Structures are given as structure tokens and as C-alpha cells.
Image (cartoon, rainbow, N blue to C red; front, side, top):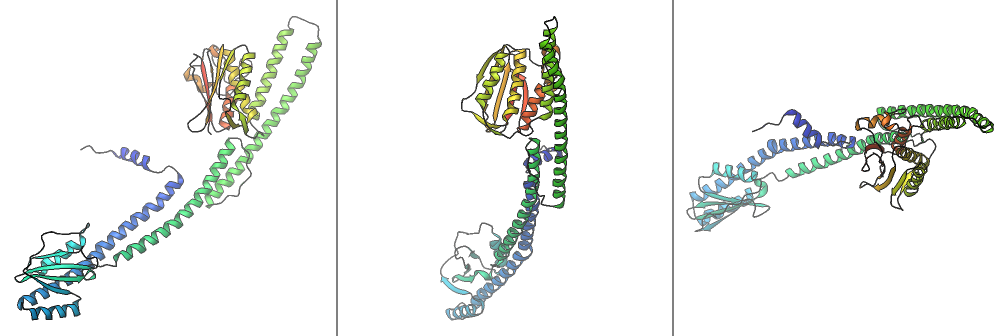
Length: 447
């Protein structure tokens, strides 16, 4: 027989245990209570109920033995009448003789058999004659029959003479107390877990760029301390983001002013040989400033709203066609989603522009996921990106090898901005090999 290693046992147990804090906290309360209830019930039945039942059965067996021996000493109808009357008055036993009868051949026993086993042992220790009994035919009585030379002596005894019939009351009270204690524990745990869930929801919303009001921490002292620390951290991060955005906006404005003067002077200057190159350099400088500012600003200040996915993809397709590549759109006309339109439009523009820069054919498609989420795919037939460089391509200011130098007019922020937008919506972007032969950028956003 092959033994399961402790490590395998640990893995199997880990898979079966609940993963949520609510489930684990509930298990911490419920499991000890159930173990305690089983242990107390077992100890009660083993040390008390069975002992009491055995004593009662022994007493009943002694009374039956007395009645049988008294009758065998004087097996006459008058003697039987006296014995039956005395047994009825003092022992609550009903005794009758079934002449020329034999014991039944069938044996009826209870499903558990504790009472039958104890009663059988008691009768066997007190009676020398063959006997038969039935504890199931009459709910409130026990039927005991003893074989005598004259026939079968039948004794009907109240069930409480052989069994401790009130034991179930203890079990009922134990169950009621357990349910009450577990109910109080569940309410307390739920209140504590709810405080942690509220903190997690606030952290997730902040990670998506959503602005929420400060909430009043509640729950245990440690949970309140964590919630207070989170809100203070959120305020510090928000101040840092606002300061960075303001700084870059100011720098952008300061850079645009001399850039505008250069454009004006270049437009007023007489034609010369380097004019076209200078215009190209100024266009690239302006594009770089726009990308820096967009990366720093992110999605600040924009609220989600219902947006037509078809309109977004068709707008991106128009940009692809203006860049000189062919564009194909595959999306249901009535598909909508709750998005930050400007941020998502910029993410799609970055992906579509990147595809148009390196391929001649671009395909944009969208579909609903079985989970209710949204998937948008931008594909091209360009040279693609090596699989080991997929994550490197998302790093800000990353410039890959010349085989596919994305953002040739920018500074390597196109994919970084697109992923930041996707993650701000609770999703992500992954890269893969396209069916067209080039790169496939897949945006997945939960519903």
C-alpha cells in the first residue's frame, strides 16, 4: 500500500480549504464547535446514557427473572394471577401466559442496536430459560417473552424501564446552544470581514484611478488602523500625481511657447534647403511632449461612460488608413461598454498607430467574453516582436531592436500608456503572434 507523503496531504488539504477570509474565519469557528459537540455527545452517550440504560435493563431483567422463577415454583393459574397483580402494582409489568406456544423465530433489532444489545446481555445474565424480546413493535413498550414448559410467559414493560428515554433533550439543548453561539460568531465575523472587504474595494478603485470619498474606518482596531493608513497613503499618492501632472503641464506649456515661435519664424522665413527637415524635427518634438504629458496625466479627471465599441474601432481604423495601411474592422454594431472614452481612444490609437507603422494590413476586432467582459484585438502583418521581449515592450521609454522599433516618432511610451489605460479599467494587455503573421495586441477588460 502506497502512503501519501505529508507534502501531498498538505497540497490536497490546501485545495479543499476555503480561500476567502470569510470562509476561513467561519471554518475557524465552526470546526471547533462541531468537534466539541461531537466529543461532548459521544462522552455523554458513552459515560452516561449507556450506563443508565444498562442499569435500567439489569433492573428490568431482574424483575422478569423474579416473575418467571415465581411462576415456575407454582405453575398454577392462581399463582400466575397473584404474580401478575403484584407485578402490575409494584413494577408496572403486564404478565400473561400464552399456553402451548413457542417463541417467535424472527428477531427484530433497532438500526443502532445499543438498546437491544444491552437488554439482551441483561436478560441472558438473569434468565436460564430461552427468551425473545422486541423493542420496536410498540413505541412505548418492550415485549419480552420467556419459554416455559406450560407455554410462553409474555411480559410487557414500559420502555422507560429499559431505556433512558430523555437523553434526546440533552442533545436538543446542546444543538440549540451551538446554533445560538455560531449565529453570534457568524455575525461578528461578517462584520469584521466586511470592514476588510471595504478596504480592499477602496484600494482596487484607487488602483483603477477612480476617486472615492474618504470612508469612516470600522471593525477591529487593526483593521481601522490599516484603513486609516491606506487613506493617508492614497492622499499622499494623489498629491504626488497632481504635482507631477501640474509640473509636466507647466513644462509642456513652457516648451510649446518657443516651439510655436520657431514654427512661426520657419513659416515666415524664405524657402531654404533644411526647412522640411526642421519642420519634421519640430513635429517630432511636439509628439514627444504630447506623449510625456499623456503618460504623466494618465486618466485623471475622466469618468467612465457608456461608449460604442464600433465607433472607437472605426475611428482607430481611420487613423490606420491615414497612415497608409489597410484596415479591417470586425465588431458588432450595437456593442457598448462602460469606459473612459478619451483614455481608451488614446490607447487604441497607440496600438493601431504602432500596427500601421510596421505592417501593411491591420485588423481590429472585438467580442464579448463568456465571463461578460470585453476583448479587443489589434493585429498586423508586420515583423512582430520576439516572445521573450513582450514584457520589455511595455516598459516606459523602452526601445526594441531595429527589426521592430515601435514609436519611431516617439519615446517608447505607446504600449506603456495603452497598458496603463487597460489596467486602469481593471484589465490588461497581452502580446502574441498574429494570424496575419505579425503582432497581436489583446486588450481584455472585465464586465
